[in-house]
Length: 113
Image (cartoon, rainbow, N blue to C red; front, side, top):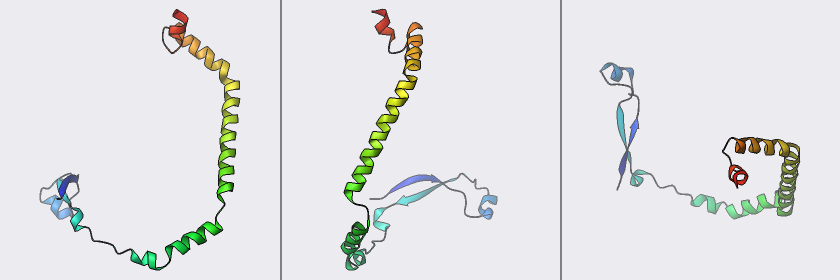
């Protein structure tokens, strides 16, 4: 069963606009899956799509190389975070200490008790 969606569209021509229609007049477009034509994709299988996939896998990088690059990127990210924390840790601590002194922030309860 189809449904309709409210889609604002401009009139198709300037003449329609001159007839008194507004440019933001609502137009209802049908949303019916039964009206969508069926595509025949069997030609993809007939061409040997699985052979194409195996050819692509043969010429691409190995899974070991990709995993190694991923692990290297993760290690570099960890090192960068540790370096940033070492450099800015004191500033971050001072900021939260000042916020807590004003009566807010995550350290406010720690200083009260």
